[in-house]
Image (cartoon, rainbow, N blue to C red; front, side):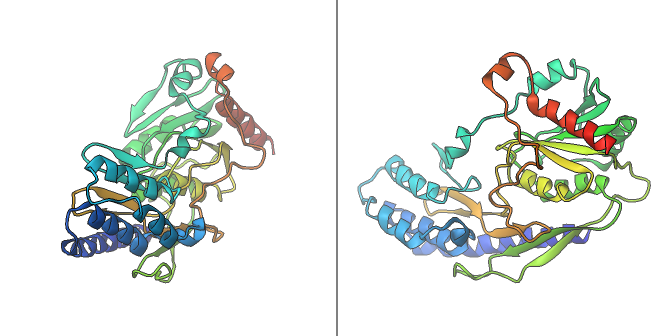
Length: 343
């Protein structure tokens, strides 16, 4: 629960920072130039990955500032601002208005590597249950399968007891988090606690403290405790399925689970996105969201750019595989579990 209190403290801190930043909005009018400056400034003062991404934000601002004109329409201004925001190359960053949402769409260019219907129909034969945002069942190979598609879906302790009890007789477990775009870190903790038997060091968190690019608080470590005595646990071999759309809190989940000796990561590199989000409203009502907090893994490595699969576990799914109703990532996970059981 100590980690939960730490995470909650960060959330409260970010909310306070958001409120404080909103108090500065009255210095801007609602004209295009003022809204552009408001957007550039709030990112300049609160975004935390300029150095890691090699971005000269002053140069970016100078370049796009020349495109802003007093007579611009709202849509014309939005397009310019959206292009500037995408210079961050950060899938955690988005600009939203009443008529559009802009985000870094390069992520869409990666292989999708997932089709849930294929899994449900051809591997589970539609014989599965659903509870607390999880789809679960037992594969013919006697490996348990859980698909968890959104860390915004709260995971109930009682639900987890039922699910893991149902899968207790399996030889290994597959946790599929492909296309899970993230959500709440508290749900990450709830899930991880079921796979550990002692206190686990997960990494460190560093949040922004001032307007300078390097105004960062001292990093502090966070830990997860095992599930309470009497709760259902699963300590057999585990394979976690990932793709480039495994993002944010899912990225955090994968980075923590990867350090466990009984876990292998199978599929594609995760999408990354380790920072806790910061949201600010511009004078014209548009909202900008981006990362203002840095999370590193237990080895001290920044996880912002994604988590690689375990050695020998990088797998893609081709169009021919999809047409044939095959999921090579799921099949490779079963092979990996079989190898782990014989070692």
